[in-house]
Image (cartoon, rainbow, N blue to C red):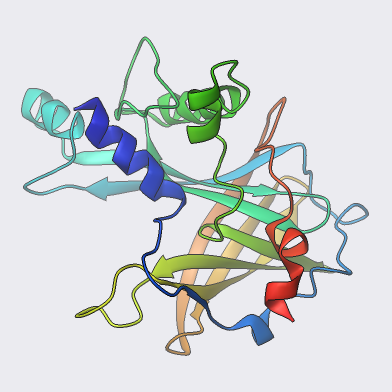
Length: 237
């Protein structure tokens, strides 16, 4: 069962592609070579999180299915997390809950609470510095993969966040072999919160209305990864 959770953990960040991999919408990207948030209005020594509840039906994931069977509660609390860096680089961790036994976040107590999900994030951050090479490699936030990596830009009280998601070019034939760009646009409410008002999917040019609040939580560390776009800048020319 832990093997299944390990697979789920890997999917949280990205999925390795097979065959020719393509990165789309490079012309839409924020200027990552000349971008700085050091003098902007948001705290950056931690992460921003949005709370949500997901209602599971049949065939729910391991450990969540046990919780539902035991309690009869099928609404599970999740966190969506954004780490924003001083140079505008962004790392996203999505749909983290407090019940799943993640490989990089083993803990004593598992609860269907937001605080338990925050504890999972805390342990993931610690695991990246493990003295065990295998654990450090697996829990290192996949620095060479573009999935769940992105860029942020702030103009006055507006914030724009672009993120890449790994998807199939042709769902009937392909593996997960393409990175597609999504853009979140919102309003900064304070130095520790912002509200996302819309999401643009560049693949379809569809714009969805949102009203998702992200709040700040301070941490001692963040994912120890380089800015993917600066590191691989020749791919975006």
